[in-house]
Image (cartoon, rainbow, N blue to C red; front, side):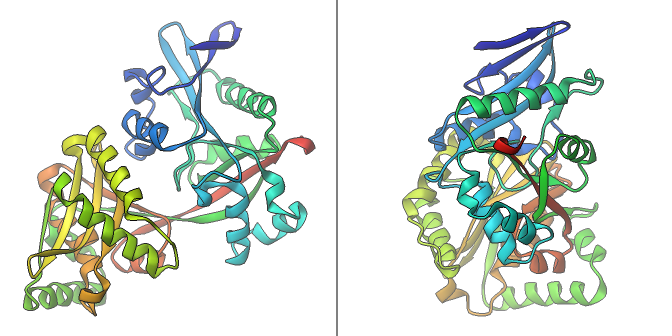
Length: 366
């Protein structure tokens, strides 16, 4: 643990492992929406990120006032959709707000690399963490240190890839400091009403409720069953094959070994809080969704489906919506996070969607 600056009345520090800052004081900074900044997820991210993660913190005595997660992304970083170059290019191609203009100003998006990616390298809700009542200069101080760190490692830019539209404090701070922005995606989340599956279905508009009820009748007639249970390591090879099939459907070359490594890491760190919503037909898992618990929320992670078997069967909706909604009350869960992508399908089953904004600072221009 290395002090990078000391100024009364707080102590600014940099940590190279989540074991340093991520104790109960770190967890106290989090809300139910911050699973990807929790100790367990950060520890998994450290295992799977070649570039070292750096944690910038401010302390006042025993209090942790604020924190920022950072990691350097370069041309070799495999998490391409959280990298500012590939994210900007993709958003411009999709016509997202502000992306084409910012790309034209940038020229070659590779000029943004290497980039100090802040707020976590996950897709959705890049956050700067602050304790309630933290001194007014805490957020600015963390950004000062992030930008200084970026220059010290030769970064060309600083990026917050996915700032939620509702995070007005961070958005205003970044804009005041000269960061440019473009829309970077839509983050889907499903608030679950009381009453399990019946309550969920009752909250849907009439046409969508009837569609969901028809889906379940179709699955029952086809002999499809579903369940929700802790991640079983014996199932991991099958789950990995199914995720590779999903990736192939979208034109991505994905080795099942990548999924196997990720799921074993999740099993190590999440224990009973790692659940799998399975859809089974003819004695074989035909589709699934991994749900990770953080407080009273589930976060959907890996998914996969047997497309040759699936045909027109609504396996996706059973695995990701109907079975989780049925089981949620028994687990004390009041919402599910589905993240980016497939917004139309998610909204058709009751999800809300929040716009995410990428904020970029070109260091040579600052």
